[in-house]
Image (cartoon, rainbow, N blue to C red; front, side):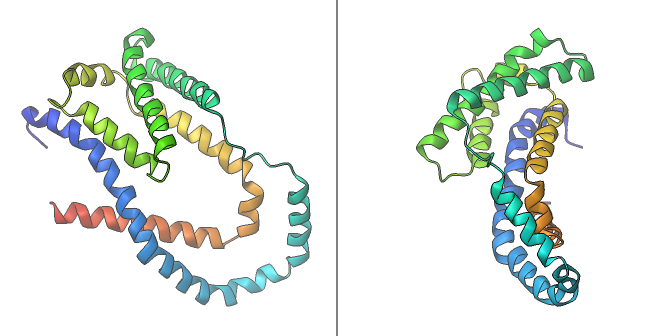
Length: 217
């Protein structure tokens, strides 16, 4: 446990801690997870592939059906994204009130600050689209939440502190479920291969975060 006087610094470093695992995980995925996945695929495909060859005709039929299905992957316009951000923020405020007994009006200023950071990230990515969204948003959040960096950083921290993290997870998991349901035919075609790739990628991210934590321990 850290002393109470170090709490503001810990709050400022929290976004950095959230930023490191995905950034390092990218390199682990490229140089460790993907080569490991290719090796595992070469070993497992001759064994597990025997069970999928019998369904080749079904796969071809499924591909034909999928080609006839209209695509739903069109990108949202900026106005649609703003609407989506507002709806997600509203659901998070409702969950924050029911789960943590924080009135919506009390948490509204903090939510507006969070949404402003998200919108600013969206605008920056239109100018520099090659940067990862997690990286840009984390840098903006660290800048806004680091005491002494901005003139009103302490007030920002106090307002955002009324919005708890867990209410966001309900919205995020709902979006993830809808996304998986939309791409369910693609997951079915991938079969067991997606399991190997997912395990290898997650293992790389976990190992990278663990090595950093042990190095700075």
